[in-house]
Length: 575
Image (cartoon, rainbow, N blue to C red):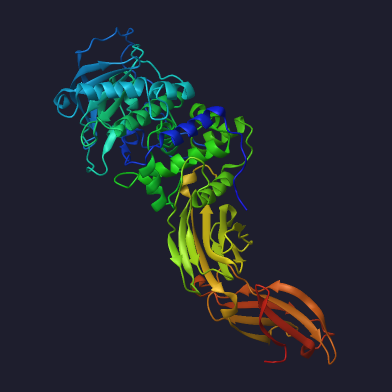
């Protein structure tokens, strides 16, 4: 069984994949952190329906529009305003124009010239932006991305994007540094106030510009060109929708780097190690954001490969809806009727099975079990997240599961058989939030994959707890008894106590009528009810029924079963 769908692959995408294969692009170290989210409105949240507020309220454009700028000669000096990420205030940077391309100006901080940045650095940067990328030696970053996602804005009227090479003032360490950013403030005029700058007044550079680090980022490296592609996509996204949420914006930016042929390996590797993060959130402060880059990129890549190709990604960028609403609208506009929740369920399974054409994934499960019974285990899920729990030697196991949020929870078991085949089983949850599955006798290894996907007004505001257990059914024993109800003598109770807690498993009772010669059915198998309120010790079950006056108690035989295996039997008169 597979969850992959056959889709029509566009000719351009085939060429792109072939180029990747022919070029043999290495998965070299390429992880970096983008500063753009830190310059965005902190009220940007991943709401499914409520759009975040605009970065700057109307009326902040305090300066008149400037006339179109003349072409600048190399050697032009200019002072820019730049954010200091340590204080979130601005400082000034003295720069000189060191290179002019067809689509860019390259300004360099004076203190970095002929130390970290040379004439060769500038020419290589212009070549990457204007002329050639790893994916296409005949097309630069600018043409690759604008042909797909539209032209950038042109607030300064010079028809070029400024690439500012500077030593970004960053509070992070060398292993987690801000390698670049796009500042939306530069798309406004005059003196502004931005909550992202802690309310301090800031000045706009009134230009289409990208800030590229020179320390510790090596500006002479392909990684620096990767950063340019990433930050340029932020500018294009902003031009299409100034209110887009961070996880969508960053996912598209990493995807843009991928389209240009730059490595996204470390972002993907970070997600492989932390696959249980929420797709629709973005960490704040000093939290590790690398896995979130990987998650949002993989989501975009999955939509590309399974739901309409590059056209779907173009529609997501251009759609004015935000977060899941924008993605849902983009899919609907292309005739795709699956819900976001259903696609997310497919995606969580595809990640473990590495069902991508362009990359290989190797997800690390949260934990592995090797001995059984496992006991009652607990976990917690954020909205639009999944966990991966492994079981070795899983032949014939019974997996039980219960969730605190059944309406939007989904749980699957991926069986890897000793025959080499793979099966996916959905564990259906009952009205009581529980479910179970008996694994095949050939299932050598199994992954339990619970997930939560609640599409609501604020998708971030939800989480759920869950429990699971793994047992071999034959090992679970019961003590059973039948007792008359002390208040209503015609009512009887069948009581069953399991030797260990049950998660997702419910014993059933079947009643038979017996005489000296035959047995015949009296009541079909019916579920027992949990008596114990402590979910950590859910062992005591009860079934109550009314015995008709014409039926003698001594003629009634009960049988308690678990997963169709008898675990206890007796007569009403055995007490």
